[in-house]
Image (cartoon, rainbow, N blue to C red):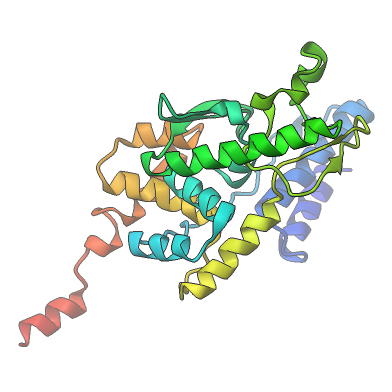
Length: 280
């Protein structure tokens, strides 16, 4: 495939198929892998091809009043999980994958294991949620004890920990804080165990709560994370601190939340407002 053909192929993806920038870049990476690793043909000019740029989108952010209304429309464990998303800035799966041992009420922090990019980090544990988290922890431990009594009580362990620590998959600390209501079978081991709550459960709950709360913005679970970051910056917290709490590799990713601060569009007085006020 010649350089012109590759460029035409990638251009066709962008114009005819209307695919995303990520899909275009994935197609280019696949071509590079095919020629370099499979066909063992070096095409230096392919390295110089321009990657598609991802469009810059401003995140959807809820006001504090909207967050309060949204959370008030949630119930039970979904309320607690939604409150954690807003109160700690965790991603959806980071919250669902929490293990009992990773919630430290004494230190007032939560350890997020193997987050995006394979990194661990610590996020704040909201003081107001400590009693509810203790009750959720107790419920998870009771469920685990019941599972063990019936010969189960196993949970999936990340990476090679299952081989390194045999039997750890039945220890209370490794159990999910938000266990699923149903048992499932691990396709890798064939063992029956209890996974965490499905992400669709909370996603659907937030969607229904948004409608009940009368919120017109397209709010999702991730919107609570956006709101966490924006409200911290509004409160005067340092952007580097917010970057660390969110687990962003580059501070430029965090800076997008500054769009709602006093330096943004809301701080500019519209010329229409000036015109109308001058005429009064």
